[in-house]
Length: 173
Length: 336
Image (tube, rainbow over all chains, first blue to last red; front, side, top):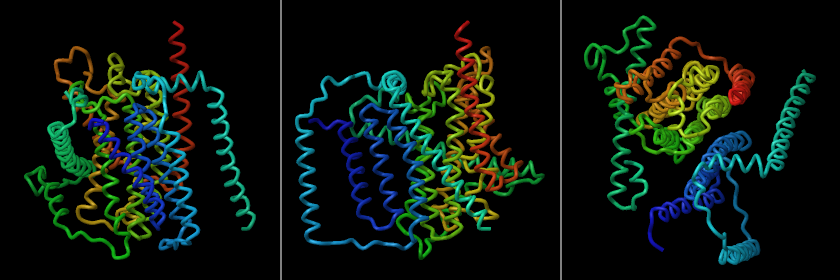
């Protein structure tokens, strides 16, 4: 394998993503964890760019930067400022965890080793957004509409929940 | 030129060229920020029947901002004892970096541009959202209730106003059929989008002022209720980074408004095309910047409880109606 710019970019992005993930698990304060998550998501967006999926990359950042801010707000509001959790340790737990990781690594190795995507398409980067739009609105129109109905239901559910609270408060007073 | 560079082999030389270009751009932007602050103070001064800075650097106070920046750099860098130190240091960086990254995608003229992205518009909106995280982080890490309140407000405001901002430009995307900023400028060859999409322009300007955290939407850092919002505890060059991010966003947002609605580098009339594109771009850009300063000195701050209602109940429905209208008109025009 030659050392191309793409390879360098992939290695650094992958490194940041993995380090972000590990930090997310190991840090003790909520806001720190959320920030580690930011690094993971942004570097995953970078990997999308390397795969010529620029639309996906932009949407990844667009959605997750908003989502992460919300998670951070919840983290601030629902936890105490200097709250740290002590890690639970146990020999059996560690052993089981190690076995689990080994199994996962093995399964992934088998899955990836002889993976063949067939002919890689070379026109992915041309009008990326348009291609996704056409596919979404012709081939996958029913799943797309179902998802939007699901989202609408969630939205209305949130409104109903917050409306109820207000009425109860009004009755209390 | 950049196009060739992007496809060349990686190496020290390549890295050096990119580094140099980025440094030059950074210096240009720092120069802009220096004089934008001065212009803001001068224009606001004249609008309020004052002089504005007029001592340092001649009658026009040309060196006032330079002196201010020097003062900021020499100031003691304080970190509160109970602040979350790593995040306190990291927050200004997270807030500033995206503001500089977005400029890479903006075409100043047909030659003078860095990256010609197919998703240029989406790129801008996506990356600019990252700054909010820096603000919230800074507000939380300061361990100060005013800072935290400012950070919370910043998050709520940025997320709410991002939606009308995106919805208002959808009309332009519909008419152009592309997210590429170069294509959007090219589509304005005959008529600028400000004439074709006046409703979108108004919604966009309002939402962009809110995204820039400027008066009348400067609730996250309102001096007289939150002291200074999310950057109360910051001093010296860390505070300067937050300010810098704000003004770099002003640069980027004014450029984006020029590109989207005012025809970018295209001349006003075709017989005026002997004037270079860069001059046209600069003129329109300065007009938008002046508009932003004008808003700042003439509008009172909006009330916190009206802020969200305004975004969700007024701006968003208008932007959605604009999309419908644009789509219908486009289809009707197709029939003939």
